Amino acid sequence: MRSVTYSMGVSLDGYIVGPDGGFNWTAPDEEVFRFVTEGMREVGVHLLGRRLYEAMLYWETADQDPSLDDSMLEWAAIWKPLPKVVFSTTLPTVQGNARLASGGLKEEIERLRAEPGEGERGEGDIAIGGATLAAEAASLDLIDEYRARVYPVLVGGGIPFFPQHERRVDLELVETRTFSSGVVYLHYRVAR
Image (cartoon, rainbow, N blue to C red):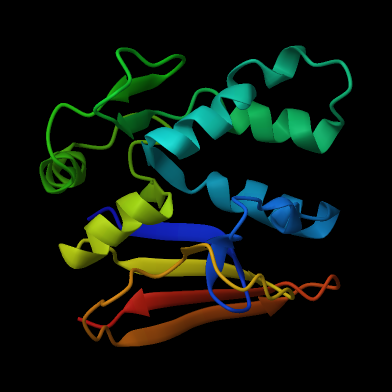
C-alpha cells in the first residue's frame, strides 16, 4: 500500500513559516537541495493546499528560466509531470499536471491508495504538502510517515509543522541525517 508522507522544512522551534509569513530560512543549500530532489523521485502524487500550490506554480514553467542551474532544472523536470491534487474551495481551475480535489481528503487518499500502479510514479508515495492539509490528515490518522528537515533557526511563532492539540502519536525512527549546513533530517514512521 502507498504510504502517505508529510515532509517539509521546519525551524528548530517547530514552524514551517515565521510570524511574518516568511520562510526564506528554509532555502536549501546544494547538499540539502540534492537530497530533497532525490526524495521527490519517490513521490507518486502530491496533495497540496491552495497556498502551497500557488507558491509552487513557478515550477510549472521554471524550465524556461535561462538563469536556472542544472540542479534546479532537474527539480523542475521531476516536479512538472508529477500528478498533483489541489484542495481549495476558492480556485476555479488549476494548471499543469494538477486537478482540483473532487472529494474530501480522506476520500481522495483512500482512492489514491486503491489505484493500481501505473507507470514510473504509480507506486510512489502520496505526499502531503502544507501544514493545514497535513493537520487535517493527521487528525484523520492518515499520515504514515513524517519527514522533517530541521533548520538551525528559531523563528518564534508562525505556522506550526505539527498540528496543535494533536492526540499522542507514537513514532519509530527510520533515518536521520545531518548536513554540513546544520540542517538535520528526521524520518519517522507512525507506529501502528
